[in-house]
Structure formats: structure tokens, C-alpha cells
Amino acid sequence: MAFPRSRRVRQFYLSMLFLITGRAVQAASGIDPDIRREVSRLPEDCTLKLTVWPKGPGFTLRKTEAGTLRLLPPQETSDADMHMEIQAPALGFTLFTFRESSAAAASKGRITASGELALACSLVRILNRTEIYLLPRRIALRAVKRYESPPKKHRRRLHVLFRTLIFKPPGGSP
Amino acid sequence: MKSRQFFRFTPPGRTVVGPRALETLPELAAGLGISAPMVLTDQQVAASGTSSLVISFLSEAAPPAAVFDRIAPDPDFTAAEAAAELYRSSGCDSLVAVGGGSVIDTAKGVNLLVSQDRESLRPMQGAWNRTGVLRPLIALPTTAGSGSEATQTAVLKDPDTGRTCSFLSPALVPDLAVLDPRLTETLPTDMQAAGGLDALTHAVEAYISLGKNPLSDRLALRATELIVHHLPRILASPRNQHARLQLSVAAHLAGTAFSNSMVGLVHTLGHSAGAVCGIPHGVCMSILLPYGLEYSSHRCMPLLADLLLPVAGRGVYDSLAEETRGIHLISQIRDFIREVHRLTKGAHPLRFRDILSDGNIPVMRPEHIAVIARQAAGDPSLFYSPEEFSQKEAAEVLFAAYWGYPLDTDLVKKGHQK
Image (cartoon, rainbow over the protein chains, first blue to last red):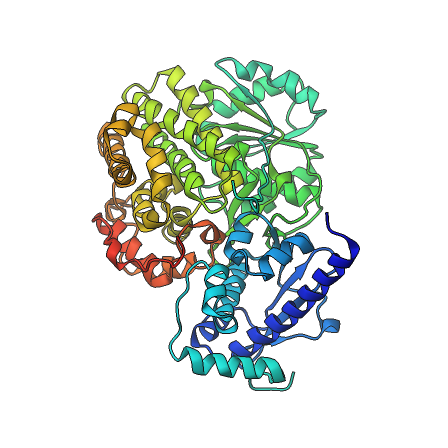
């Protein structure tokens, strides 16, 4: 049974992880060619949202004119072309403590998706690729279905982490 | 079972099975409280007289207020939206689908539109999203294959993009399914073959999918056994009523299994091949099934070994070493599909290259493969595949299935996880 204090800790952990992941996806979308290719296939101005049901946390990303993803501030996140929701904070905790991959979570029905499911597939691929930069290999191995080390991984990883920390958006202001 | 294991299982609605099951339709319809149903069917089923038979039974309790028969194979949103308009203008209160997977999936689409008072299906796509309570839906499958009468999924094509779109919600499960061998009596042999192999693909993919669970496993194994046993009997003797009913039951079990565990690579590629080239779904499934298993075999060898028992029987299973059973299953499935090809006198194709249009032109050409592989990247069933695949790898599988040569599994990038 989860006690209120542990729930608060979990909620805080999830909020931090969503913030870091959202920023990292934004950063990686300007650095990694595979993510750029994935983003280029998204419709113009497309918004993708990932939240925990019922009240968050979460993040919303929008495709920019430059072909990257921009993390939207919370006040701009009402509508999305595709909204993925993790069904409960406890399930989100399992996912974001990297004890299972996002593909496994989706396949076990722990994540709902409203909107075109092709966009959900794109978001999962983008998250997987970002996790390879964000996480040490040992942890990333559990978070993704197939670990493929990208070229120039270490240089790009530093670049992604730097942009994540200082929250420098690719090609524009946040 | 791992302590972290989490699964959910949505059973099918009430199911009535038997050689005289149709006779109970009036009482069952009355029990659902329906008075003005809309019957959905396709022109082939209407021409065979099967839909008239159903309507005659249904009329004893609830005469149809409307009949919609303009549903093509691999239907798109247009048919569902036109049927929803007719539903509203005729004052219907429920839906009765008489047909194969295309008809039942269209009926599910209509149900979403009329129950939620929406005009377009496009914004209603999604997986496990909250759709609320829908209108009563009765499904009478006239093919033994799709299992759609038991599933919580519907797949319809978006006419604007040409993509197949998925709808997944427990509310989509039909309230009642009636399996009567008279419903499949007029089905041509090649469609019977394609349907049976579609059901086999559902069962096999349900068993190796990442979304598998102990309940879907039992159903998948039993469905596999029934299909392997009864499909050749039907093809050799189409009037075998018992075998036809057993195949319908198998398709229903396989439908329930895959509805709860989902399917993988074979469906990912098959949906896109169907959408791009217009190849019937069951044909795509049977051509791609051995390739899908070869591609994922290194990730699920023990599961493939389990499947050998219902496919080949105890004698073969026991005679083989454990580590060779999975590979043997793939060759057994290839042999089974060849046997189906022989029993249909070649009407059931073994590779994509052999599928010809009415003008004797191949419906799939090598240049289609890149398009299919690109479209497959957006199919949600790829989540459930035991092995990841890129567009390049998808194209390799499709090329092998196009020419009919075995897949070079050394080319497959092996995932890192055991």
C-alpha cells in the first residue's frame, strides 16, 4: 500500500523526470539525425503530449518550423494531436525508474493513447532514442527494446545533457 | 510469473455457438432490448442469401429499420460515416453486423459515431481511450478468420492518407456473437483458406506478443490446435459442417486471445501491404507469417517450441530436442501453408509476387515495398513485436516474402535483451 508521503515523493520524482525528459527530447531533436528524421515525418505544428493520469505530471512537445521539437510551457498544453496517458502514477513510476521499456508498457496496456497511433509510435521511438543519450548504457538497456549505439554517441550525449541542463532550445528561444 | 507482471483481459460478449444458433437470435435480440436494428453487410454476403437468412430470424423480434450493404473489403471511414448517417435518419437503436472482419469493424466504427454523436472517425482513433458506453452490437461472422466478433479493436482505412487506423477500447467488444455453420456455408474455398490462416496468425502472434498473458496464452494454444486440425478438412470437404463450426470457434478463440495480447510484426507489415496494394488481409497474413516468426525467432524460441505441440502433435514434439522445436515449428507452418495452397488448387498464393489482379497484373511490385515499409513504421502493432525493426529490416522481410525465399536471419539486428 502506498502511503501519502511515499506518494508525494513519487509525484516529485515523476515531475522531475518528466521535466528532464521533456527538455532532453527538445535538445536531442536538434542534435540526433534519427530523431530529426522522425520529426520531419510529423505533420506541421503537430503536438504530442505524454502525461500521467489523472493530473500529471507530463509534457507537451510541438514540431517547430525548423523541424525540431519544442517543449511547451504548461499554459500552452491544452490540446494535442496525440495524447498518451500513463494510467496511474505507480505505473509511471515503474516506467520512469526504467524497470521496463516504453514499448513493454504500451504493450501491457498501461498507456492509453488518443489520436493517430502513428504519432504515438513516433513519440515512443523519439523517447527511446533520447533515453540512449540520457541514461547510462546499463539502465538504457532496460528502457528500450533494442539498444543501438548512435555514431558520435559521447559527443552528442554531452551536447544533449548540456542543452538539457541549461534548457537551450535548438534554433530558437524556449 | 514476474511480480511486476500487469495485464488486463477483456472477455468477448455473450457468445452462442451451434448448428442451430441462429434460431435463438430473436430471443437474444429481445433480451438486449433492441427494437429497430440496422443491419450492416456487404454485397457478396447479401448476394449469397446469408444476410436475408439473418434478417428473417431477426424480424421475429426486431425488424431492421435499415440495411446498409455498401461495405468493401479493407473499408475506410467513408463507409462507416455513410452508414452512421443512415442509422440516424432511420431512427435505429442498435447494430447487427453480418459479414467478415470488414463488416464487423465498420459496424464498430458506426457504433462509435452514433453513440458519441460524432461526424468523423478521424479524431476518435486511439488505444485504450475512454469511449463510454456504446449502442448494442450483434456480430454474426460469415468468415472464420478475423475474430472481430470477439475483439475490442477495429481497423479502418483513412481515405485521405491511405493509412490503416486503429481503434481500441473494451467498449468495442460486440455484446453478442452468434456462430452458426450456416453463416460460413457459401464462403468460397480460397476465402475460407485465407480466413483460417488469418486466425492461425492471430493465435501464433498472440502467443509470442509482448502483451501476452496467461489467459490469452490458453486461448491461443487451443485455437492453434483447432485450426491446424480442421482447416484442411474444410478445404477437402467444404460441406463438413462440424469442421466449419470448429474453425469458427477457433477464430473466435484466436480473436479473444489477440484482442488481449495484441499482434506483432506480421500484422504490422500485413496491414500496410493490404492498405497499399489492396491485398486481402488473410492472404497477407499467411504469406508473412513464416517470415515474421523467422525474424523474431531469436527472441521467442521457447514460445515457438510451445506452439509446436498443438501444430505437430505430441509424437513430433516429444521426438525433437527442446532447442530444435522452435525452428521445426516454422518449417511445420510453412508446410501447412503449402498444404492449404495445394488443397485450394493454387488459389491461395504462397508469395506476394503470385497475386494477380483481374488483368493478370501483379498487384504488388518491388517498388511498393519501400512504401509499405515506411507506412508500417506508423502501425501500433509494432509495439507488441518481440523484436524491434527498422524500415530497412521491414523491407528485407517484405522482399523475402515477395520472392518467396527464406529470410536470411543473419541480416536481422539482434536486440540486446534476452
